Image 1: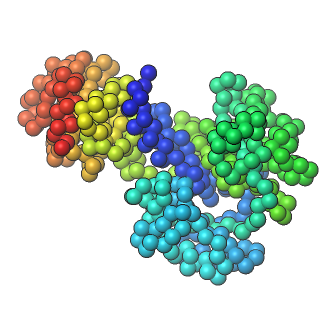
Image 2 (image 1 turned 30 degrees about the vertical axis):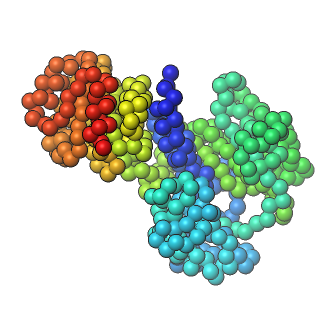
Image 3 (image 1 turned 45 degrees about the horizontal axis):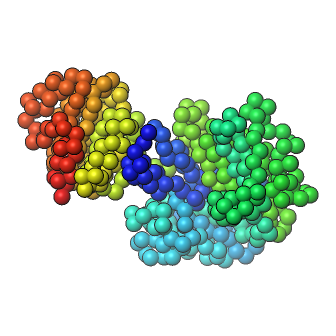
Length: 426
């Protein structure tokens, strides 16, 4: 069972990474889940017959100016493409330009894109560091008549996909459910039989669509189910699923989780990954299959096993400190993996001390020791290092560290080691 303080630390970090501006992904378990930009997600939907707005992507001001000419009407929507929510209320760090979403006259699209491209957008979800804007999405301007909510996710209770809908959209589904639980429609789908046209139409009707709009919504619902199954999604959430004044029914905004375990058969989707939107340390950690999440503290942790990692984070907190990361090297780590992990945590400018806490079982203490020595010899040691080794080959591991001559602090007692790490970080 996960300890509550440590769980909150990791959960908070994970929550801060969930984007609401385009396709987003859950963060948890052993691996990150793929996040796509809004224009990328809408393109995937379109390939499966889902109705979406007319869009174009631009990566320069000149390109935005040229592509704006292809939209009907006098105005176009210009939306910055970063993996974070709250874009409309954000601002750009370099020029203090307000807002990442604007409706402008078509001839002004180039200038508007110039205010965004190459800049860093800061929103409530990005934190002070912000996210780089390397592309903008141009979208048609439309008027919404009504907003609905729709989602597909896996349901343990029914043992397969479940569709969730509501006649009310455009706001938090949690708020809708709290005010009126009966407003939420839930329809399980047999994973073997799949979604029939009649089921899709019934779902659209229960969500409040009528007549031709119900048929159009049902077509998109069938397409969204195909996306969910064929693209190995963990979740598809549409909010709002809108009926427009002109009679069309379209997907206006979405969150989608793609299962990283299916990357080998979803290469075309995973090739869309934009690492400029991710924490560089987490990107590096993924290369070596390390379970790493950046946190806000000053004591870096390198631990084997999620349970010990959580306990380590708890003990640091109880000792008056704060963990700088969650880092589980796992049971099959090699000398190279340990070296990579050490480079990542030593390279974090927020880290003031490093606590390596290993319980040797499958992961042997001598392998950890060899990796630490190799890493320090390669990158140097600029921060206090506390090492606790217990378990398989512990004596060999201690001997390796002692003979290395490294200026480290060896401590076998868990509590004393954690307290020392906190004290040396001050």
